[in-house]
Image (cartoon, rainbow, N blue to C red):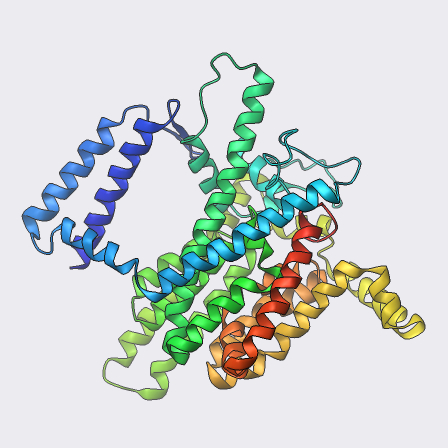
Length: 472
């Protein structure tokens, strides 16, 4: 049965590739770094799809692919899928509208802002780290050993997301034709950054379905629905509407945990491996899955040794993903951990963090809390997000389990030590267990107040983010 599912999936992927190649405005070339794959002909992936379907139905005739597709279409009417679609339309699209309105009304800083187009709408997704991912998707990784520790370099950004951006953009970028070089370059850049936004939105919608299923295991359908709504309206959920890795990481982290608890260990391993290639803190997912893998040790049921060993193997996959990237960095720079040292250019080092904490303390003690908020308003908002997440660690531990409390701590404490509260607001947006804990703690009649407050905060952060104010 599992083999037939994989063959069906491969056949559909080949069929979709054939259709995309046929509709693409130009010959598609995918630069994978080590090789270039050309998809200029549509009939080859179509032929492969037909061969895969023929082999599959010859060996495993039932259920046939048509029945699978019908069942999948029926599944689109299930509560988690319907709720995910509603959240996509009612939270992600409004964030983009607010961001666009803020760009026109508030305006952008006068200079020093990278742009991909003079059109403010075409340029809308190109904010902060999105421009780094876009450049990696365009030209790959570059490392200059002559640059100092304060010079930012692209190797701090992990590869899965920009690779997906490059792949999707390859199916949408036209040939140069009569366009000038500058026009063609701008078109390609705009297509890349919007491809990244599409990936983020699609990953977020899929992630909400997975989070719903996971929350349903621990709190039932009513709590699961509340979890999804709270997550989607959370103030820092703004970053799910940008070409950032938040949506993809949420999908892979929640997918790995849900698949692991369902004992679908190969799927959990694949999700964990991809998460490890998405962002640095994904390696902490190995710790979370490792705690879940050790559960059979307490029960000592029949086959507990095999179950524990297979679980630990699956749990190691996020760390394997990190090691794969370290191997690539070693090949590029000669040091597998250069990407860690390069984060100092963003202020992520212990000395700078300690000095900043000392400044925060002196400001609050000498001049009061309001003086600190006035001096660093966007940072103060991120402090609130950190306090919110840490306050929910104990409820998560009691109501959901130690593994998920560790998940929150492992994603919050290391950045606090190494980089202060920099970017921690968006990091907390992916900590899905805290939203289930909040849904279980807050009575249903009071959730509306939380949702409205969250939504107002999200609109405010959207205005700050899309107008290039200091929050990223």
